[in-house]
Image (cartoon, rainbow, N blue to C red):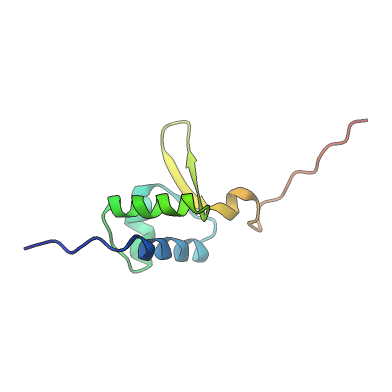
Length: 97
C-alpha cells in the first residue's frame, strides 16, 4: 500500500494562518503546530511538509520564527512580534532632562 502524497504547502500555509487568525496569541513549535494547530483546522501532514509551509510563511513575512536561547524554535503571528497585535503596547520614549 502506498502512502498518500504530501499536502500542497499552500494548503498547510492556509491552515496555519487560519489557526493564527482564530488564536492570535498562539505561539508553538514545529511539533506543536503539526500535532495541534493543523488538526484543529482540519489538516494532517508530516512534520517535513509542515516545516516547508512554515519556511514559506516566514520567508513571506506572514509569521515570525523565534529562536530561543535553549535551542527551541517557536512560530507565531508576525503581528504579535511587530507590535500590530492589539495587546502589544509600544513603550513611551523617555525624554532627557
